[in-house]
Length: 194
Figure 1 (cartoon, rainbow, N blue to C red):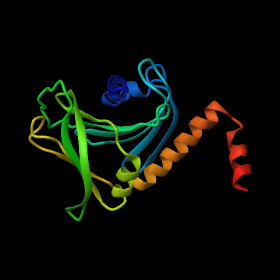
Figure 2 (cartoon, rainbow, N blue to C red):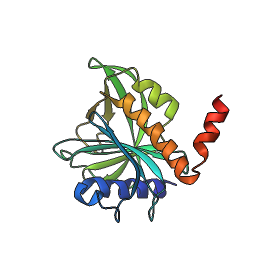
Figure 3 (cartoon, one colour):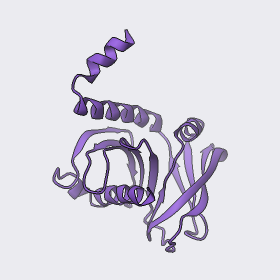
């Protein structure tokens, strides 16, 4: 399963590393695309080595990027951080670290995280528990990736402004995916809600 997760993250990383190519439907077709503040949300169609996925991303001017992937086939959630200032030490096995949510520069929530080496600027964090992760994110204004010293000498702080609004767009992305599979899904949902 980890190879599959790594494959999805690597394919998405390629799409985000070369934004001009990412716009080409031949390379990375989207079934959904929207932006909220500094966050983008895209629905990626399945391609070789990947699954259908809804993706939240934040891209900085220096080319650094944080990507949160909702795999629509397995239900797994994982993330990737590409930080241009890193020069990570290659590791064959995952390394234990942590993720923390901060409010006003103080840690208010967090827990263990597994970091997988992607390349000299990239780590992948598989197996995110959605209940714990998203309830913690609502408490803070910044996400801290506490990358183990075996990989990097510095962690990363990700501002969370507008992140909750981006999560709403992920729900819209998931609905667009369901409508793509079954165009009659919306009338069925509405009938159940009445």
